[in-house]
Amino acid sequence: MKAMTLAAGKGTRLFPLTGEVPKPMAPVVDRPIIEHIFELLAFHGVKEVHANVFYLADALLEAYGEKSEFSGMEINLSREEKLLGTAGGVKRLADRFDETFVVISGDALTDIDLTEMLALHRERDALATIALRRVNDTSEFGVVELDENDNILGFQEKPDPKDAISTLANTGIYIFEPEALAYIPEGEFFDFATDVFPKFLENGERFIGYEGSFYWSDIGTLAAYRQAHYDALSGRVRVRVPGEKRGESVWVGPDAMIHPSVDFAGYVVVGGEAVIGRDVTLAGDVTVGRDCWIRKGATIKSSILLPGASVGENAYLEDCIVGHGYDVRAGEIIRGGALIRNPN
View 1: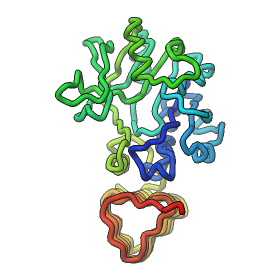
View 2 (view 1 turned 90 degrees about the horizontal axis):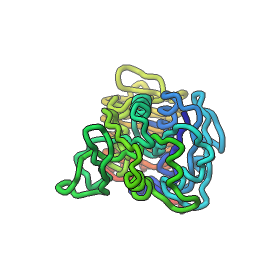
View 3 (view 1 turned 45 degrees about the vertical axis):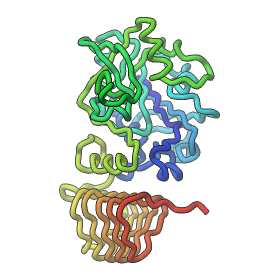
View 4 (view 1 turned 90 degrees about the vertical axis):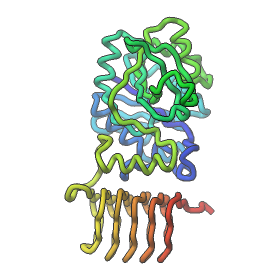
């Protein structure tokens, strides 16, 4: 099976974090979101994946190149000259998809059972299958109405909960037969939810929903980004946390230097080559990215340090996201927010 990972968007709701990296490259437990997706695809037997890149495309191309290999799976990145939408981006690479294929967002976190979803798709002889998850607040998502046989009856885009036709959210994870691409015009901005799926319904195509018990987060806000780290560290989402596991709740990357006096009091991942000094406290769910430096006496609670960040002596951080290369000064006390380096 082949796959398409959508990685061209700007991720504006995650700003200012996405002012310095494209959303698919934002780390979750010290691994880019898109790398968790690549690992998921490889685990479920995908042999070839294509990804479209546009916003801050060089960051993705620098990390993976135009062609690379990951866990026995071939990765191909293709730069879009202009944004073509979710469907238009797939259509541009239509000649790559001559068999059943998966489309999945490169900037959402999930552990969906693609093997089970594919089995349902084939059992029902569907042209297209959408993965669906129950949500509490439908105003943030497109929702889907199903009949008792999983056939899709209709869509609603971000309805007020009191007006919603269902609480089943479209996760942006799809399985298609190649024939589905005939519904997408060449070279035009086209979206699956608003442009393609209504045409499936109009033409009576076999179009179904898969409602599994999988984890899914679109990581649409900074709060959701912090929650995704906690979910990964606490095991709510089945993803691989990098590093050597020490005890029940600490992971340490290669060549990290940790003083013996460091107090770990929660779920913590320490990236490769990070340095953590004397009498530091790491409490709650904490991610210390690779090449970070935390100096003597600092306290970090429920926070995320992206690669290259540093924290000065006796500083205190709580519920913070510290951007790439940002330097928290000695003695600073900061609660909440995202700390991003000024590019000037």
